[in-house]
Image (tube, rainbow, N blue to C red; front, side, top):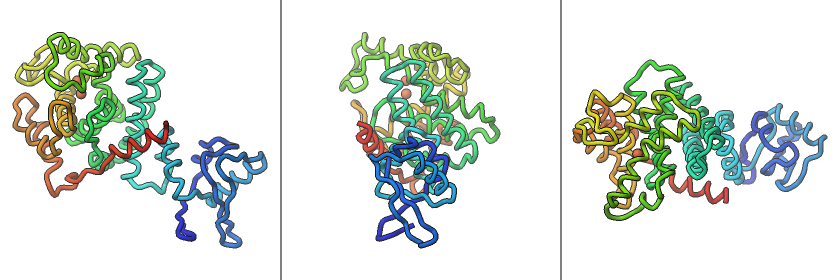
Length: 341
Ligand SMILES: [Fe+2]
Ligand SMILES: [Fe+2]
């Protein structure tokens, strides 16, 4: 709906009910059907009376409650923190949904990374389940996620990139899968490096080589991830494999166990590939970002990675293809971080 060049969008009952009953977070407008006019009903910062709360519920049930497009940022910042709402809004495009899911998971991951305790894991776990529910309904919805990979190196962005790329790849390789498998694969991918929070963070941005001592500590993040997941009571096989094996390589040159090809699980190989790809497309202290197409080709040419999986990934971002142009989600995430501050 558009009035005086201002756009308005409709709010449904589930979303209204998720707001504070007496103090909604944004301005609300009511469409008066009898006179065909949209008029202000509530200004943020105010307080609704009990009578107004009931009236509003009825107006909303009749499809006559609106918010202004100019408040969309407030509305989205609110949704990102209650990700379930994203799936309830019929007015959002697949791209907008993917964007909010990506930002939502990145923020949850950051909170867990800063405070790696079971309570924070609960929030992250819950939001990953919202995304798996969404992708379970239609696997093609992974495409708008693939067009929204982060290009800046940071633990939360890396976790989300790896989750998206790994899930896309896994979906290409598996036509029939259960909801439970999807849940587990996505959780395993997003958490593969969780133990990195136990490593001094300046290692991640250090220019030049790590000392032997620093390297020893850094390379223990695989084991640290497994331990941290156990502390959070998450123990399924895909997760342990993703955490423990994502730095193993097909030729035995990886760590921590230097296992080879067939000794590395499918989940370990999948995570290794998604992990390396996600790192390569970001600017890092020791290397410049590569284009997704270039990263895919280099991994396909690298015998340390599973060839079948790498060949599928290398086809994803070919120039001119549906995934060849990425949308900038780095600035979107920054905007949300600022709106939370
Ligand atoms: Fe790692
Ligand atoms: Fe990683």
